[in-house]
Length: 103
Image (tube, rainbow, N blue to C red; front, side, top):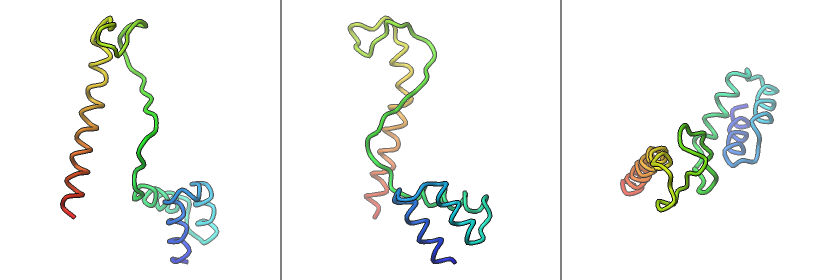
């Protein structure tokens, strides 16, 4: 049973198995739904992050005429909303570089 669960966890980490499929197969092996969900979360969380994608954010403030073009911006709201995102990204990049250099 342990070997089968490890196999399913590896498939889930590679994106070859959905959460629903993973939990269903684990329950057939006698694992409770709560434990199977936790195992799925650990397997997927351990997977390498992928570059790319789209970040969608709901922001407060600003006008409908705002732009990220500094020459056309009606206010500083877009820049103030995006600064924490940039700061977080820079911090994660530093941590990633430190981890790679310590190997």
